[in-house]
Length: 64
Image (cartoon, rainbow, N blue to C red; front, top):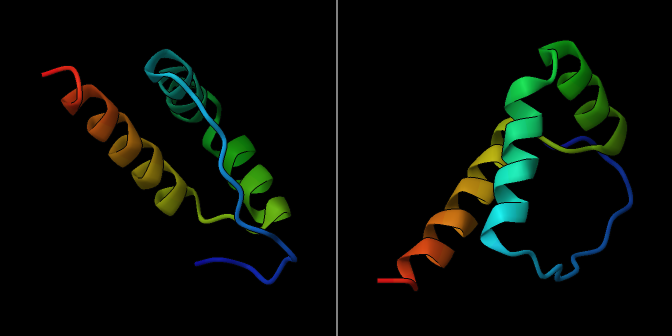
């Protein structure tokens, strides 16, 4: 669920290692910290993790 917060879509260029760091932080941080941060910024943590995983998968597929 996305919470009502003003936002704008932007493109951020990340390499695969940078994406992995963000995912590691999401997985390694206490779930309450992740949930609180996502709620504060109007982001659904499941959607964010899925989006990062999809982007990582697409980037790694380019290596094949």
